[in-house]
Image 1 (cartoon, rainbow, N blue to C red):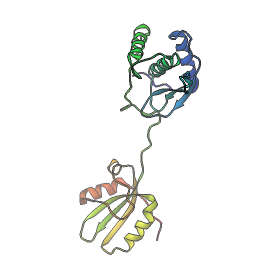
Image 2 (cartoon, helix red, strand yellow; image 1 turned 120 degrees about the horizontal axis):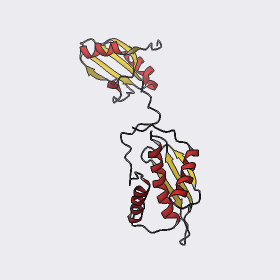
Image 3 (cartoon, one colour; image 1 turned 90 degrees about the vertical axis):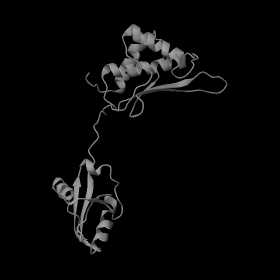
Length: 219
């Protein structure tokens, strides 16, 4: 796997100037170039169009820095958007956004310059440049007088209210608060009222040993 490159706005400009000269015969005026944090697309070319068939204007190319990519992959995205820019700037009619003209230009660039341009890029499975921080959950563990046990992921904003509710329920024999980043709780709803998931005694005790005790302020 090729090494990921840190994408900057300066680099986008340098790459644009390089490929404008190399591929597009230096015919494209410098558009607005932007970094984005888009998650669903790696690049985008946009422009405005006026009334009465006025030429398109205010061209902008934005490149996402959200995902880790190699220099070659980033350059392919930039060139992809430059094709869109070339077609729009020169008011070339195409059959669709990635129509016959676009596909013909893309194929020629891939063949002539050894690029790996594609019609679209799938972001699913790509690694973000900044790893997502683990989510810390506030957990309430409850034992009832009938022997049942519950674990609950609590919305911190409602923890004090839930603690007050517990103090008034005589059937609760013990309860404890914890914090954890355990994956078991990540898909559980963060409750705003006293409810939880019933678990076995063995699982309850296992989780108690894996979580960090949290001292809830005295009521």
